[in-house]
Length: 125
Image 1: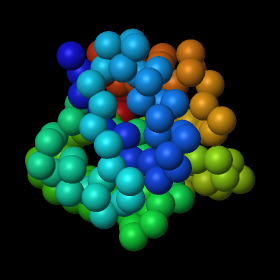
Image 2: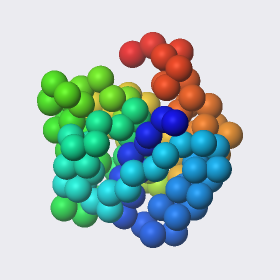
Image 3: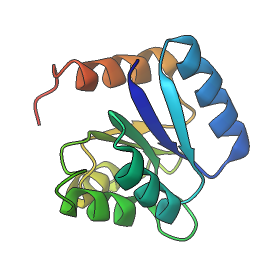
């Protein structure tokens, strides 16, 4: 069962994504801020990370930079999630080390397709 680390500070978003992803057969690990997300990723080594960009303690871009700088987490795909879909946000997330980008509110079929593509190795880095 693929393990996904969900780094999300909003409880409603966290609960909704957790329920929907678990129903699709994924095991969810949870972190509520960027610092905890980095710590969990380093200790748990998930198969994929869903990273909110607007997080307390450490924002998602900074957390992605930390994870991509570490040998043991560098190859874990990170999909940035954000409600602030402004011009340049996608590029900012990709430059920080995120491998993909998706917007909130979450379009579950689109997000599931991205997740599966990364887990199956069908997405080129």
